[in-house]
Image (cartoon, rainbow, N blue to C red; front, side, top):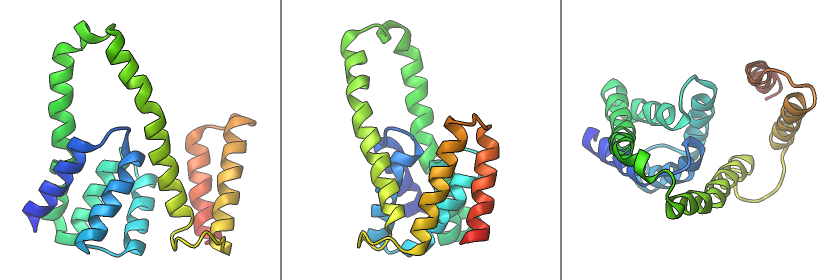
Length: 176
């Protein structure tokens, strides 16, 4: 089981692009295919990982690994998700200075932006409508109101993001 966790998150780490929220659909698909944890448990893990300090992909891997195989599972999943990034960053850093002005490299990164945006939007929709029906229940309505209030607080009132995160978490606890 530890090896399976390590290899699963190693693959995710090598094949993912766009940050933690872009990885969530791939992790969810793999976790569901393996029947390791339920959709509800996965949703809870990702919610907790998003509230915890640090990258959401790493936090999610750690919590999933812990849920499946305890402390050793958490270590295996975390090592698997971190190792590819570490290796890639070391290799890219060695050559980045020469490639940073190459027009093909600039164009490739520019072209990947809409893909990452789509993956993040998919993750948001998946969590907003977990049953796949598209119907809005009272919990989804509350979540959308908290989201709208958060955007308003950040953009119009220029509140500090940490304050908005804390207030959103408290609202979620109280209202849901």
